[in-house]
Image (cartoon, rainbow, N blue to C red):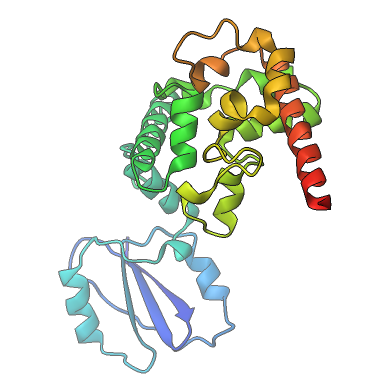
Length: 272
């Protein structure tokens, strides 16, 4: 099979993509494409280019390009946005440890791909949780999952999403679980306040975190009495992880009551 040459237009440049065959590369350079001529560019997406080179549109030095191709044989330099979808997929899978040979396709084990992707996703989460400023992710992995996040749990649907049908009850619970709540810890992110300055506006007893809202703030003392079943059996020291393991319907009702109590207090303070 003879080499296939594809030329892709870019602003002020030619992009030469060569599907090379064994032996010395032979080059054919098409004339400079107009900026709005996408026909050859679209056609090129059907090919898996092994070698690419970008040159100024006015420089048609075949010998120079031949030497460049020889030095960079087999190197994939085509920008990702111009790569065909199959090549992008192969590159993404390769990053996760799954090799996909597009030149000699073989049957793919879906379970192996799922396992590799889950393991890669877990590693990304674990690495991200150790970085400075990752308080939401740390809250979720520690508070919700108890620090035992594993690959199998990544594909597990949280029970409250199915059990709690009413959005007015489900959303406040989701806010507490994810850390995207109504307290100062979250609202302080908007104006980039230092974390230690995001104090509770109702009691001033500490940063208004999820833990402060659920366990400590006196604003919600009556609700803790009303929902005493959610607190009386918690082992000491009390943890968010243990708290969130309780019946989701009851947790959702409690979370909705917390948010309503906060809103009433917030509106009353605004009138003063």
